[in-house]
Image (tube, rainbow, N blue to C red; front, side, top):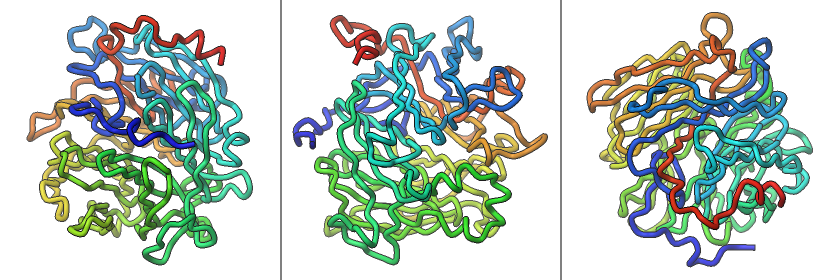
Length: 440
């Protein structure tokens, strides 16, 4: 089943408020009120369960910088990524270990989300996909990247589509040498791995990246680094797709586990960025003068020989700045990408002993950082800092506004952040409610 072309046309002027968010998503105009932090339960910390933590981030609020609600979901599922439906009424959050997807109503009371549905049959419905990672809004549906499969727990995996109501729609397997699915292999690799997904609607384009399977991401990080066989099992590809038909078009060699993808926002800026975790490079996925999509490395991140391990990235709304976090040294770096073919580092700041995710406000003035990568990959001992931090960016310097210590608060390991605001939910009479979603 595919969407009609017209249904995927991006309305003029619609933009997402977090610069990493789907362009189809309803937009916050102005200051966000809340940050929802999808948090891994940690053994010996609080109730030890994964949870959604809501933090008040409106500086006019008397609870600014404070936790206003927590909602535990039962057990430890390797909480990882989350995102909203296009109407922003529901937040979907996935677990990389159990492959459960938790659906929260954030509309009824944005300060206190409600768990209204748990999807427990993702693996069975999808035909064996394990580890729901990126959850990304398309009109009326969610497209979800998998990291693994239930046959060998390796990296062979797929894109999976669901309706906003939680109904399974389709599975789209990533091309491999044995099953290119009509795609053109442009280099050495067609490994079938997946990680992130982003859309450029004006170009009818989906882009996916690649990481590793369950066997690796659930292994102790130190043990994995010394396991020569395990280190062979990382993705080396980026795939371009037809957005409407979900037909894979080209498979590009992007060696070294390309992770997050961020696409430019300008109407004539036909390109996206990714970074490679194991080779510490910025890659550009771009449309050439002939209208063909290409991929090339365009910059180094830090000293690649020291493997700083680039993780999350964030692009500014004017396509002039790319923030790149590096987990091992705990730094964030800003690259001038005014010329996307030649990024230049212009700023660097130490955030903590470890840093992973970054979420930037649409105006570029606020950047939120969290610390956890994966439960078995986070640092040990005193370096196992677990925090949410807010910084203000004045164009020259990041200035810290507040820090929440998630270990001291007995919450666990904070991973991904998403923004909420009361202003999103005015005029929703007659829209679906958490009750009728839960009943489907």
